[in-house]
Length: 451
Image (tube, rainbow, N blue to C red; front, side, top):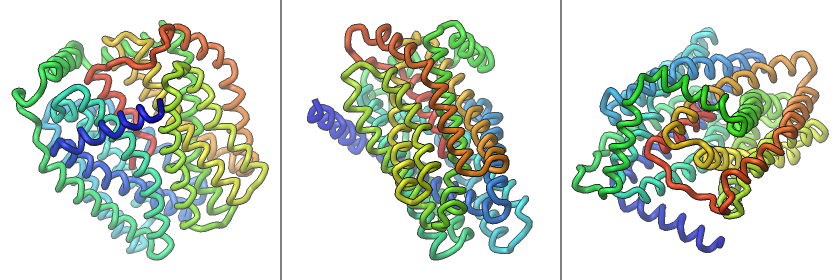
């Protein structure tokens, strides 16, 4: 079974690599993701140095709120204008903002200007990911090539999540924050150069199945106004207790993800005093855990207990915080980050797959859109809660409280996950083809590490 799954993954990578436009798009994506990691870590370090853990938390909350407010409207740009032009415009806007931030940091201007630019960079980047996801079907010749793009995208994200922080740790250890920002600006140039060479396929170059997939996706997206589609996603979640239970657990995990934007920096710089290079090591360990977690999720998928594994994955996101709260050393921190990284992939892959099985395909996109709103909200709550806990109880006690509360909150939901598995995988099969529209929303959920 493992050999077959590995062969399937290799074939998916080969199919995507043979498509010039997909290959160039993912070159752009990979370089940009490394820049994401560099910018996010550098911005967090700058906030910590200029305002402590409070500044890190409030900056994270502000960025999440800004992204949540803008994303629903920014995502519509991909349906109104050329998706390639939307991506290029987003890259150029972020490049300009990051360059200004680099000069302001170098000139030691008031920190509030830099904070505002950090938020603006996140806002300017919101149209890129929906446009990138939306253009994938028009670049794919066959449905299996589109599915392969999903595999490649997830792999690149995991690599970017450890390569970016590693580069940031090096730059911050041997250079400075302004240099890291200049490096990030260069990744936007890289992205623009590759995106500019991408060309959607002509209909004659796509299979009939791919043409049908595209046309059905277009009808689904154009059927109703955005606000009505979004509200129907929330109503669908409220009307299905199983989906509601899964979404609640997913949001609980996002609370810890939001808290991680604060506690990772505080652990490295305040608790362990390992400096920015140590912070980069911690973040890289998270990415390595993500790669391994994706492999684990792939291996466990044939067992058709995805919802149960998802529930345990949420617990593994939170419970390891108790380790570093009890043993505040580098080894415990690295084990904690590795476990969280592995759980992140397990949660993300299983959550989407389970929803694809229990939610009707004609409402799946709307449910995923509502889930995205809950994700950002949970992250904002987590960032704010961690900031308050650090000041009220201290870092170690705050970690213990977040870890214990979320872990205990997940336990009542585990029976529902078993019920979902019985409902969704009664035939023991954990695979179902999804529409192009579902693929778009799958990619849009990956905002946890947006700059």
